[in-house]
Length: 146
Image (cartoon, rainbow, N blue to C red; front, side, top):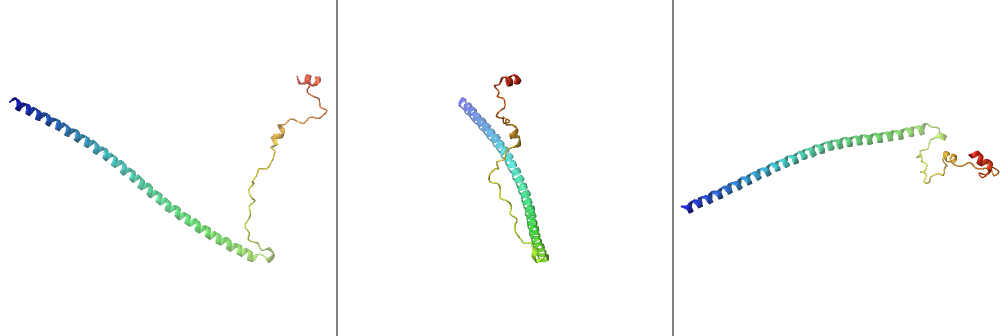
C-alpha cells in the first residue's frame, strides 16, 4: 500500500512538473510570437514608408525630366531664332559693315599674382632720414625726446 501511495505521489509530481514545463513553454512561445508580430509590423511600416518615398521620388524625377526637356527645347528654339536674326541682320547690313560671327574670347585667367604693394604698407614704414639730420645720440635730441 505504501508503494502504491509512493507511486501515485511520484506520478503526481511528474505530472505537476510536466504541466509547469508546458506552461513555461507556452508562455515563452506567446512572448516570441508577440515579439515577432511587433517586428513584422515595424518592417511592414518601414516598407510602406520606403514605397511612399520611392513613389514621391519617381514623381519628382518625372517632373524634373519634363522640365529639362522643356528647357532644352526652349534653348534650341532660342538658338535657331538668334541664328535667324543674325542672318537677317547680316543680310540687311551694307556689304562693308557686315558683322562677322566670331566667338568672344575671354582673357585667360591670371596664373600669378601681381606684385602690388598695399597703400597702408608704406605708412607703417619709418620715414627716411636726411643724412644731415640729428642723430639720436645728440644731447639736444635726447633732451627733446624726454
